[in-house]
Amino acid sequence: MIEERVKEIKQSFRQMMDGAVAQSMREKGAHYKLNWGATLPRLREKAEEIKRLPPSEEDGRGLYHLAIALWKEDVRECKILATMLMPAEQMLPEVVDIWMEQMPSQELAEQASFNLFQHLPFAPQKAYQWMASEKELEQLCGFLVLARLFMNGQEPNERGINEFLDQAVTALQGQSLAVRKAAMQSVVRFSALGLVYERMAKSAMKTLHLDFL
Image (cartoon, rainbow, N blue to C red; front, side, top):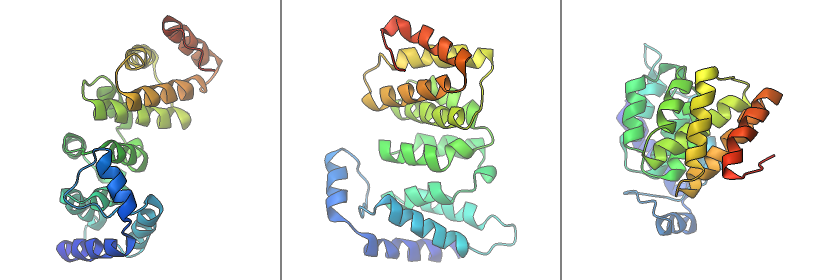
């Protein structure tokens, strides 16, 4: 039963508890009903342990349903584990939208982008959609995912290039430090795709008087 697995997983967090980490997060504005302060390496170990013994379901979607159940818990560690366990190829766009709407913190946005969103079959479409959003965490995820896609050698088409550079220039003039950093990271990764891309990026950044390379 998925409910029993979730209960067992939640009980295991007691062994990972780090009060100092949890307190630091609360001071930075990350509020959950429960936050054990478990470190990311410990959570990755837990995720690998669960993958070795996945919930047994005939349709092979045991990890999918476990991830859905974990995400519903207002517990930091449950939500991070959900991003580590969700099979990207099984996640539907509408489920991604729900998770994004419920995204509670910058840390989780970063974890979801790295662990899950960059691997989605429709990652580029979502990244461009989020990048143009007015919501800070959506913008953050958009630029983080694009940075990973560029790093993996995915080249945008002409329309995508123009849209990306326009949005990056706008983001780099915004108020959010996290979004500015993610936007700059994505521009650097974009430039690394080749000399032509580097020249386009440098040209776009001239308006901001930024020399990033």
